[in-house]
Image 1 (cartoon, one colour):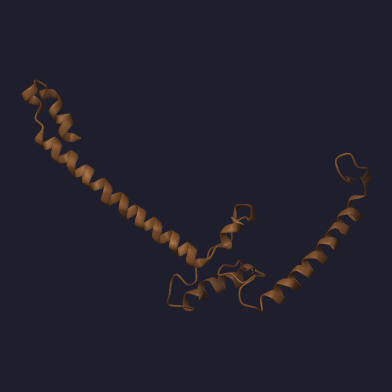
Image 2 (image 1 turned 135 degrees about the vertical axis):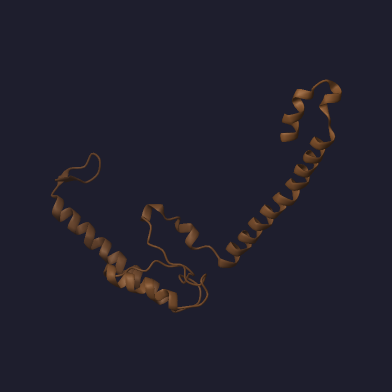
Length: 149
């Protein structure tokens, strides 16, 4: 027995779920037809990323091993075992490749800027530690700590 809603009446579970499956199967079929029609045109549902489903494990292993011979460019084909559906950020799959590459370049530029802006500070503090002599001020015990800094 299953309830049709929180306060709904009880229904037989098998006919209820069978009807749900039939209704969803019709929706899946119509969506597949729509996608097949749209995939014939440039853009639309065509993306640069995909999930491929194999009928059995052996076919997946064969393709996975064969994929190394598909292209000399190692970044053209990136293959992994599929994650759980709940772990997928679906909006990330629809990102534009050019925008993603721009973000990668910006990230590298920011990391390089961090090094170039941080290194002068480190060099200045190192030189300052070599110049300052605390023994002149009666603080000779601080000198090893300061030079270690």
